[in-house]
Image 1 (cartoon, helix red, strand yellow):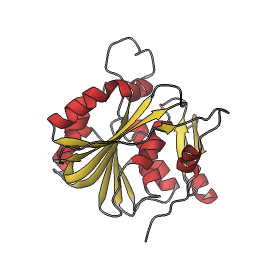
Image 2 (cartoon, rainbow, N blue to C red; image 1 turned 120 degrees about the vertical axis):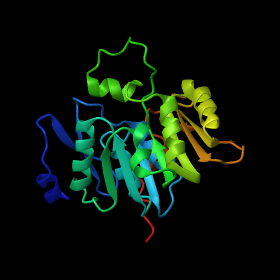
Image 3 (cartoon, rainbow, N blue to C red; image 1 turned 90 degrees about the horizontal axis):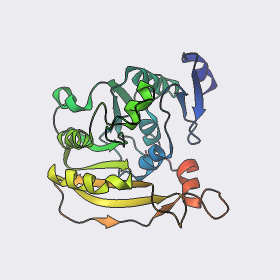
Image 4 (spheres, helix red, strand yellow; image 1 turned 90 degrees about the vertical axis):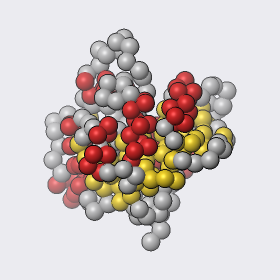
Length: 255
C-alpha cells in the first residue's frame, strides 16, 4: 500500500486516513465534510448481495463504497454531486487499487436514471444530508453545507431516486436522524419502498438515539422488524464490543 499512497496526488490541505480494516485508506480534508461513524455503521448494516450491482448515493469521498468491498464481490458505484468530493473519491479508489470494483460518478442522483436506467441495482445505500433548509446554519463553507443540509437534494428526492434505480425486491439502506423517521417511513411507503428493518443507535445506554438505520425493499410486503439497539460507548467511555467489531472486524469477502 505504501507505494500506492505515494503515487496518488494530494492537494495541500488533504491527508490520508486509515480506515482501520483490510488495509484500506481514504483521502480526507478539513476543508470539506469528512465521513463519520454513521457512514461506517451503514456500510455494515446494509444487506448487500454477494454479487451484482450496488450503488451508494451521496457518496462524498467514497468511504461507503470502499468499506463495502470488504463484504461483497459485487460491482459498486457511487455518485456525488460535488466535484471536489467526487475527485477525492476517485483518487481514494485508485490509491486502494480498487478501480475494477468501484466506479465513482460525478453527477446528480436526481437524474442518474436517465443514463443508468431504471431498476438496474440490486442494493442501494445512502447517507443523505440530514437537515432541511431553514437558512440558520448556512454559514458553513459550501462543501460542509451541502453535506449537512438538503441543498443538492431533499429527502423526498433521495427516496424517489432510490425507487427509480433499485430493482423490484432490491434493498435500500439509509442512515439518518431519528427525528426524521416518520418522514422517512411515510415517503418510502409513498414511493413503493417498504421498511423491513430499523435499528436505533444510542451514544450510551441511558441516552436517546441519535442515529437510525433503516432498510426497505422495493415492492415488499408490509412487515418491519425493530433490531436490538446499538450502543456506542460503555460506562467506562470505551467503545462497546459491537462497535469495535464494526470498525476493526475482519469479515472477508467470499470467493
